[in-house]
Length: 441
Image 1 (cartoon, rainbow, N blue to C red):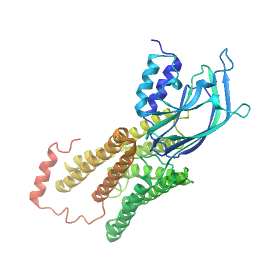
Image 2 (cartoon, one colour):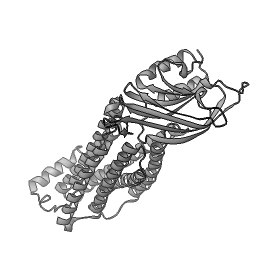
Image 3 (cartoon, rainbow, N blue to C red):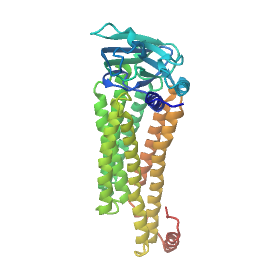
């Protein structure tokens, strides 16, 4: 059966709803202008048995370009759709190209434009209890062909605590303020210990070690801002400006993290005092790309799937992140190859072997970190029940902390004299090891 453009668009929006993360700013106000989309996804939220959703629309305008200038108002309305019902609704649309999702008994109907007050002040405001705990997506459906909608929409989603207070975080994210606060304390302690280590080894502290200290500081500030952001969203529904600080420190942290990995991979400051041209080029590529990635992250986090280019911004973020993750590997590979070539001519086999071992281990650690935080964490977010979404955030922070600890331990400031004090037998064994293919990547 041939599908109409309306059906194809509806299927597309229903499919992308499955990949939308739960929203975290649960009081949202937005304006829809001349929008002809058959379906608009506003947000996703995990409800308990005490959940409520409030939808307020005002300044509603319906403009039809079809021969019928007065479309049926019951063909335009809001509804909730659970993950379990998504497949059933998709099947209904596939079986009947003219099917309107508002007619499905698998959706939770809220209201249609038939319930609006008379024009010119067409508005509606109502709160609905969610008695069946689940993760729901809030949709607006436009089943009137050739019709454009303009309206101001305000949504409010929350669960009620036993004491009667409102919790504006989804059921799977209500633990995030405490989680981020805990990891802030971990990184603050880590920063103090790193400062002590640098102070007690002042003679061997390089510029990279100071940059690493800056990374820990920014990471700590990023986490405390995330904790405050989620705390205020939890109790008031809005971040009270903490989201701005969060995005500022997140931008600095991500750029600084990629920069530190690249500089360590090149051996800057502790193996050589300068960067080669190709290493500078990697930095010149990664830093602007990270600026773009953070812009995409802000657009994704501060808007939502209701904007027309939301999917495009997600694709931009994913593509840029993949490019940056690949780019930071090259300096480590170049350093390993350079050390292999040097070992053939300078006669310091044991010393070069230790450096090669260090860089090879760092290569494996970076690959493991990128794999887990980009793939495993995404899989956890996808398969975890909505009530346990916090587990994926905890896993990401645990792996990040482990990565920081390993990286900082591997390149900590310390005296290397005893480490490189080797005898002739060790030198000969190292020379043999360097001649084999052990360090080929």
